[in-house]
Image (cartoon, rainbow, N blue to C red; front, side):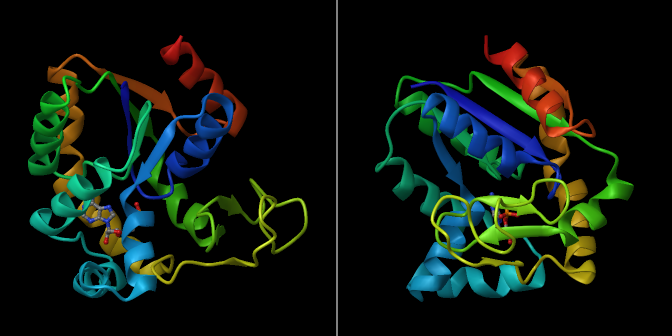
Length: 212
Ligand code: AMP
């Protein structure tokens, strides 16, 4: 089991590149945002606990998200791409411990570095498939047929937390809680900076150079 983490601000392209990695290499994609949204849709106890945080644009407390990740990890196999986890130092330490118990480790962290002044526009154009979680962008990554997912033809929706007010809160949280992870993985010597301001195909080329 190899483990790759995609680290970066909301809207930096982690979801899109994860989709490509799954298609090209069969990676197992673990998006904690998707896991939370699934639980909310099922209206189960973890979902009910998480809903208020998600709607406010705040991070779900570490103990809740770690429990969800621990459960999820028991169900998956293969090489993993983590998208949206870890988001705090406590989560990163826990992930190291969980992987250690599986005789594994973080193989690489790809830090999607982006000009944050462009993020609001990027996120506001984002469309998501509520069935498979695939993400599109109205202009940058449009679906083949407007408004429906290429893969399963589900109508695409805009996420409730993809609005200006919530994006500001999410970005502030990103700076306080998640940016320290750059130093954490630099220290472990497993971090590569990806220039995520480039076109999608150029971002992909940079990722391929790391994975080779
Ligand atoms: P995302 O789809 O990655 O943008 O995540 C959507 C929302 O889910 C975030 O704004 C948080 O409320 C919550 N969330 C996702 N991943 C985490 C995490 N690792 N830790 C805490 N909250 C999370």
